[in-house]
Image (tube, rainbow, N blue to C red; front, side, top):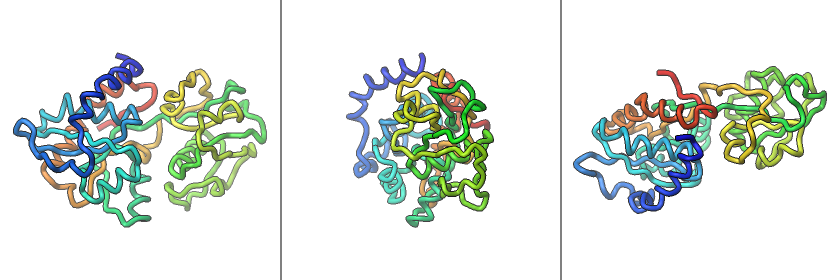
Amino acid sequence: MNRRALTSALAVLLLPALAACSSAGAAAEERTVDGLPVVTVAGATSNPLEQASIEYVRDEIAADYGIAIDYVHIEETRAILEATEKKEVDANVAMHEVYMRAQNEENGFHLAAVVPLFKQRQVLYSDRYDDVADLPDGATVAISTSTVAASTALKFLEQIGLVTVDPDVPLSELAVEDVVDNPKHLKLVPVESVPRALPDTDAATATAFAFDTAGIDPVAEIAGIDGLDEYALQLVVHQDSVDDPEVSKLAEAFADPRLAAFVTENYGDLVTPLER
């Protein structure tokens, strides 16, 4: 099944599934299913990759590790963080470690990344040029206004040789003003939606997943990498729960090679599972 067929199937399956999924506040009410302890995992249904991954582990893998998973739908990343910090959910699949560490520092959270899952391909798209070498002096390049997405984009632009960023600035804090060398004098333009900005700029950088979700043909890709390990999507829990037996089983379930195979089959051109 390709990823678009999978996404359509998930949309159909979601209707009955909603009845079985808790809100964060009710997540802890039922603690066993068919005799198995329930572990609550938060994620957003608006992200097909996160949703598909959680549902696949819940439906195909979790029981083999002696647990049942309750998928708790929370749409905003901030709300997912707060629910995990307050232990209203046991874990989440919604962020990478750079973002998690930044939130720990800024908000006094106590979150820990326990299993790296997969890296999203970072790409540079252009409707005007066929190769990154063709970008002219002073070309406009759209990047996200999101601090986390912008830092990812800047590290990517550095990796493909277009800019150099200040090595003393933490990854989570990188911003346009931290570019210390820009030989092509690129004009880095922060925008709310990078895919929508593509027609109005010389190039735009975001994850391949973002462009795919927006329906943009990957033929527009002029540069890309499989992503940095630091930006791999993680299974995240509260620091106090890292050694809990049920959380350990959950971590093992998400590290199961069947999940990596599932993601590769359905999203292999957009993400790369982490080698274990």
